[in-house]
Image 1 (spheres, rainbow, N blue to C red):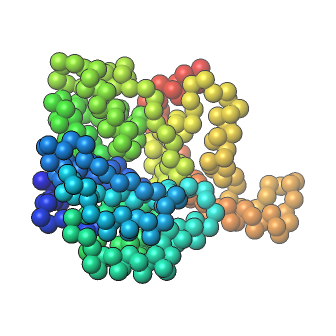
Image 2 (tube, helix red, strand yellow; image 1 turned 180 degrees about the vertical axis):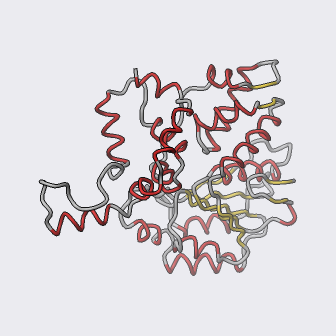
Image 3 (cartoon, one colour; image 1 turned 60 degrees about the horizontal axis):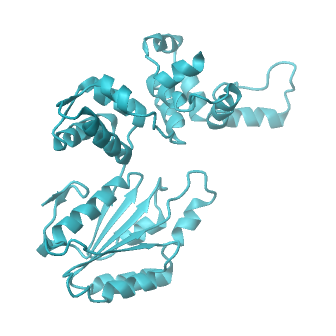
Length: 329
């Protein structure tokens, strides 16, 4: 069968002893586990067991002991899913914490196991989150013998649109182009939430075959969760439309204006700060000058330097989502 989570064919007689998924889009890893279970679970064993472990609760020694244990009598295969805790975007010294996921002793243990793995055991390791380049855990786990590694990145907007079309067809629905754009504005590129929203829309439309933008507005709640890096990334790209959408995610209906302003200040405090020294009359000490020079290198300041007034005037053509319009009133 073709695995959408892995992006390639998988067969029971050609399975690898281990699969390693790392990156921001953990949806692919969870989808692969479901596909793997559907491939391996015989029809007469609907209660196929999947052993799940979390590295912040269980050590590698116990996990490998389970992997070396024979599967249950009525289960010809054993599937083990190991999930590492997701690194928080604002965590200090994140690289040091991630390196502890696999110590030197753990690395030797894993290499010994994968050099001679159990014949009917599939080990799926998931390391979610935004990872630094050269992450120690990624380097160790992806280099293990026989392990298939997949970098699970967020899809680009055009790839998300194609993914939504395929998902809608699997639900016997057609997704209108404006509905796909609207759904992307609301949910973003989080495939797990897009999957849930498309499932709800398929039920909402009933016998109707086409999902329209109006149906998206009627049936889909404002479920977009703001990515802490989204605004900075949009500013760095100089994309005004993405900036406005990212800001709109912070202007939730029911929020006080002061709270919304604080949220904007926390995420993009450098957006309106001057690029050079302090204003006249406010002191021009060396400390202040160094501080302003350092801030001018931020994505926000780079966006201000490279964007022309014309690009801001183009925002009149941008249609604000409903939450932003209600907040502005």
